[in-house]
Image 1 (cartoon, rainbow, N blue to C red):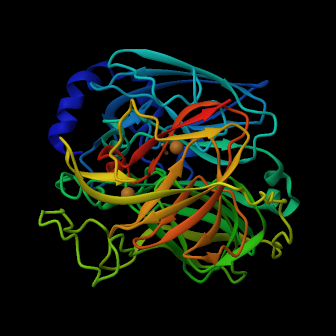
Image 2 (cartoon, rainbow, N blue to C red; image 1 turned 180 degrees about the horizontal axis):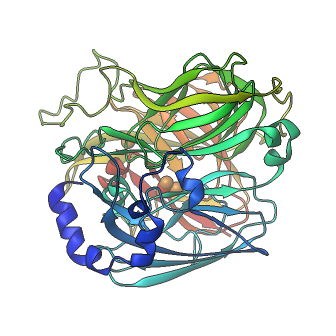
Length: 482
Ligand code: C2O
Ligand code: CU
Ligand code: CU
């Protein structure tokens, strides 16, 4: 979002900025700890999570940025919401932006209709909308994500700053080794620099050059030497892929988007695409020290030699795509005191194996020309139309979806309401079972996923989670029929 759009937004929003919201936000002063999101934690009490979210443009204190962003309650990231399976949720959204917005509960298995995860609701400027739903009793524990989802304004609003973490507690948190770890939720978000022209790169997907972690630049996180650190990472960026490595340490993946793995998976680096989450354990070196959490370069455009865009248009590649250059340091982990080395868990939780279904559908992702739209991003040759049902499935069915990327850019495919399991990538079986709601389909790749449409009928969407691509048409409507 550029300065001009900010000013336009300011006309509708800033005047109404609530002093109370600002008191809780960055106006309260810079924070030294990485745990900023936790200071604005809203927890459910006696089975009810109740919170008011005011969407507005507010001042932020993030060095290098323009000093303003779109926030919930003056906070960037928005308040962290923590709840338990079975809880009732009541969220009042107050739109003080000058454009429509709404809320999506990314990754939650709740109804796509009514006042639950209904992305077709439109909350006009100056309006309020109350969201009411219940989290199922058997909902998996995990890190989820709330963000705006009004088609036409979602990319600008997420790029502008809106979004927050949503933590569901449960079984995984009760595994003794996991419970003993020091837990840190890190919301990763890039923001445009003050002088950055953010208009470039819509086709590739806009990235900002300021890398924030819980609204801070290179914060410090303190943990005991020998201790176990549990990092819960959320990619809240519009388009940036975060490729993370912690100096001198192995990360052990224990959960993906939708919940626990069966056993920890050691990783030297972790790729997180937009909307994706990961839960990793790190055994801190017993000798202690200072270690940099780095974001390594990643090229979202297909390999060199794939023929470029071939559309004879300025794709605004420029610096977007973070393909070149050096690793960025996004946080520093330093040890403070020491404890006897803490063990990793051996086993985690069972991950259900879905039976191989009779039905396979194919979704081909590419870009091309769409009537009346110019360049569009397409699924099965079509650009998004809110009135069209693209995919009809039967409630209770399991299906395989073959996600085919015939373009030259990577596309993270996202489905609402029901999680997916990756079965294979380019025919190679996936080495472990995991529930995901965002699946990266690289340029030229075919990924087979398996989905069971459980519990909730209704209309919802799937789309590329590079939100600029979603806005440019790479989305479809799915109707789950009872
Ligand atoms: Cu995180 Cu449909 O979105
Ligand atoms: Cu979503
Ligand atoms: Cu895409």
